[in-house]
Image (cartoon, rainbow over all chains, first blue to last red; front, side):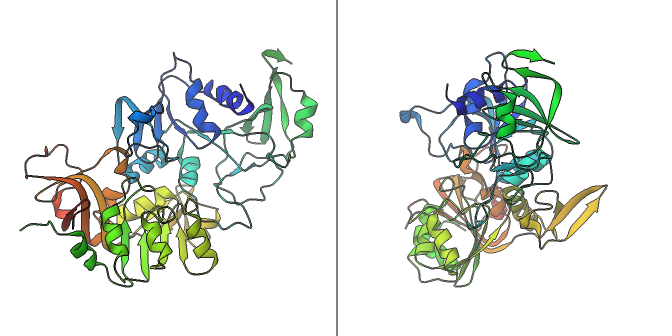
Length: 220
Length: 218
């Protein structure tokens, strides 16, 4: 399992039976592969599908059936199709239980930037703002550092903010943080990762939860 | 009174400077025969409301390449690098809306509403120039409705009256766009007799649809 798969598998553990789940592009898309078989969730795709199934074989690709990343998908029994306004009414209206999103940056209070890079022309937002605003729970899945080795968890966002709404949970290859009123709380270290490494690679200040997990073991 | 016309005649409804809505999420659910016919005309200075502007040289990307588009209103144009280039060269104006705000603005336009307050984009760059209002303790921004001179949409099947059904995720923006333009032209794969589509299944009732063209139909 590579790091991205590890993050996806960890995020999949957060899903509950019956959840309506929207998966963003990138690591979030991989989450679908790790949902435990006894947890039945319904995948929502903002281009108008509830009940997205696995990727089809090459010979079963239907060009009219794609996900929000424009990749071919299938649908499961009990699925439905609807128009874009209805789809986003579901999102804004609080009918999606969990959205799992990728990010460019997360700040010390749990706000994120995931739609525009300064200096580059801002010509796309898609459903990023709608999903962050409307989903009941938002989980961020991301590598802890970017390609230049810089922390993606920053004191203040330098990229344009996506929403004033804070996310609920941040899952990286190194650690898991929850977001509370007073900022980020480290609740879990990935196997083989030390607290020092997380402190060194995280620009934003964070609290350490009273009891947190190291690998599978609880440490006080 | 048949609504069936050729693609060539259909695109004559679009004039230089027209504001048009074009259905589709990427190329899925995009009326490609109508777009190709439009690309054969000399119309220019189009204002296009569409989620994207196709791909390089495909779908609405053809109109961009031929410099027929003056302004684009949509949610995601990054997927066509030629759009980004045209924007940087100041050959194309772009107005970006969150996808849910855009689809609801079209719905509002077709439903006779004067706009709506949405919590999406509050406090972001996109809402900088918009009226903000607090209602019951929550912040919202005002979004005006979107309407157009002509809508070019794609459906799977029409009956002779113009009742429409769609095909899976190719439905996307098409049903709202069918309601929000002065002239609505639907490109379809198949036309059947009235009564052949169950009233329970019809997504777009015929009163919204002015003309029907067959995919590839000239």
